[in-house]
Length: 375
Image (cartoon, rainbow, N blue to C red; front, top):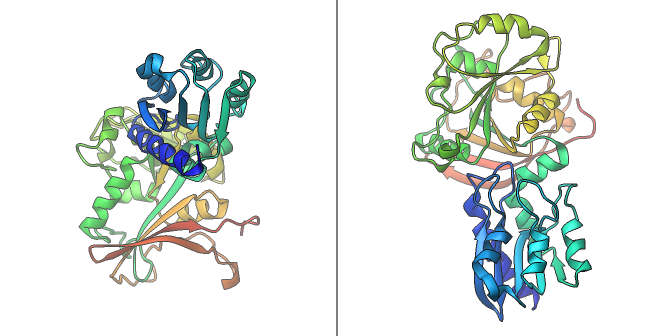
């Protein structure tokens, strides 16, 4: 088959894969379809973490019709037992003659091994079809495997003069109702949402998502809160639903923080993070979140946290919501604080990939430049 045909069926497999968006993490979204004579025989997608893989579902549905057909699958078939039996051997058993793959599996346990098994057994293999779209669809999975941390999205809502709160610390509301709805939808696409300590202590957030969001069926997104040894709010709103709560704290202050948490009216997990002079090690924090299987993380912190993430080069995607308001105030918090850069030529560039209007606000989405040398 020609490239156009391969892309047509891989496009279908990608659309099928997207159906697992809210239920498969930290596994990747994977879709598969079986084609014979440019006619669809069967299809499937990975529905839930620990469940059957897309290829297995498609093959089981095809039955004997799979013999002599072409299998399209967005990610390289597995070749070893993990949570489910290997798909590569089932492909051979069912008589598939050709396998067309979107992307290689980045996991060292399977990388190129599925392809090697298929080729060894005289099954024709084509790979790299719509690969960039497969990787984009599974940014969290690829980042988690390659870097051991989640794919990090940094979200900020700011005024025209760059403020995220008034000089009295008030921030409700900077952005418009449509923009807040946009953020609620953005949260549904994450495994967890992280808020900074000032957001927690001053705003007492709930980290809400739409009431009927599909992610809630799997208890996502989890809530990650940075805390210090200040007194915890008496009845924090973060416990108003059953989603899991993690308090990330400096390891050096863990004992004093635990004592202050004796009266916290809800179940939580404590996540001690390496620190220096009470300042959290961002890379250690993200590594620990990755170890929990968090592949997609939304950060809704303040200026200090934003600077730490930007300086560490750990922001993979940025969302800046710009509201047509001016707060003023030399003591008002800004979206990025910390020490900052010394001169304009050291600025971190914002590569805008998408711009949209939301009510009276503008939303800029893109990437923040990463540097080899941190300021």
